[in-house]
Image (cartoon, rainbow, N blue to C red; front, side, top):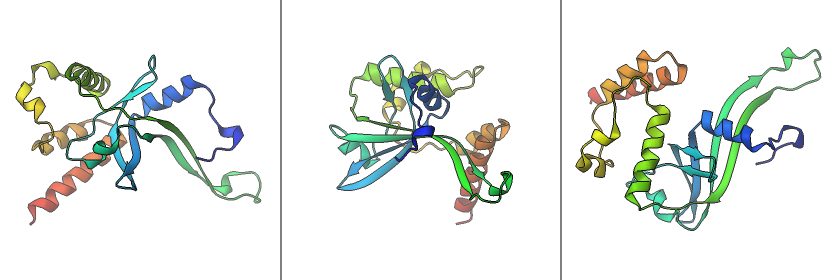
Length: 185
């Protein structure tokens, strides 16, 4: 990514903050000689400088990840900047944004303990503090079949709508529209 030198973030701690605050990332790799992208939540282990996440087994991208360099993009806040906001008419529109690009080697983890630890970190980051959810109480047979479709969308929509945050409300609206479209056929 081209970055003008005066906009380049050189402080690792600032980049880590962007990653931690905007953990829903885009993983880009080569698959069957073509670029492939998956959008997924990732957690950062600062001390080991590692990102952890989960790619669903039905997603073919995971099969080619081992031993290749990948790109992960974290996108922070962004906004259109109007030239009318400047003190002069000699300007053009622009877009201000924050993004962190991370390059590295992907590594597939087969160790069940390490996979569970990664999932627990993700849950601890995003689960509501007063939630009664506990991954350890979930039936192990269910956990081994996580690639199956979950049929609890209406409950998820209701919870997203109850949160007073724009992204969550927008996702809930899209999910509700998707359910309505499926129910009309």
